[in-house]
Image 1 (tube, one colour):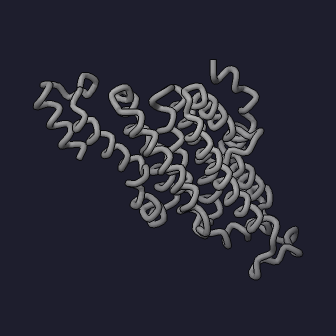
Image 2: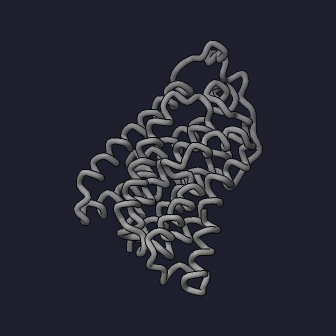
Length: 277
C-alpha cells in the first residue's frame, strides 16, 4: 500500500515527498499503511501474534525502535490528514489495547497490547500537538526497555514464571511492578505525565467525549496491570513457595542501565514543567 501511494504521488507531483499532496485517496493510503506498520487498530491483528512468536530482545526492537520511522513520516504529513480519521484510529486502538490485555497470561502479548494502547494515545494528539506525540513516544520507550530487560534477564515470558522471581530476585520483581504501574499511567509515576498532558490538550480542543472515553480505557489498562502485579507478587501460586524465599535469593550481576531507566520511568513527573516548556 505504501509503495502504491509513493508511486501515485510521484506520478502526480513528480516528487517523492508527500508534503504538497492534496489527493485524499493517496493520503488515506499512506495513513492505512503506516497504521499497519505501527500496529494500530483495526490493523493490529499481526502485532500480538508476531510479538509472542519472537525472542524478547527482538520484541523490544519491534515495539520501540520500529515505531520511529512510521511516526516520523506521520510527523511530516499530519497536517494533511483529516483529524477525524486519526481520532477514530486512536480510540479504536485504545479500546482494543485495553480489552485485549485482559485475561492474557503471556507477557509478550501484554506488552504488545500495551504498545497498541500507547500508539492510540499518540495518534489522538498528533493532529493537535505533534510535539506531545514525540514526548509520549520517548516516555513509552523509557518504560518499555526496563520491562523487557527484566524479562530477558530472568527468561520470563508468562505470569507464572514471573511469580517465581519473588523467590529468586524480589528486587527485580519490585522494579517490574513499579514499571507496570507507570505503564498504566498511575500518578505520581512518569507514565501519568503524557496522559495528563494529552488529556489537557484534547480538552482545550473541545474533545470532551473522546477524552472521557480515553480516560475510562486508561483505567481498564491500569486494572489489568494491577491484577498482574497482584497475581505475581501478592498471591501464592501452587508452584511457588514464598515461605522459603530468602533461602533462594541470588546475586545477579549489577546492571547500570536497568536502575537508571527504572528511575526515569518512575520519578520524571516533577520535571513536567521543563518537559512541557
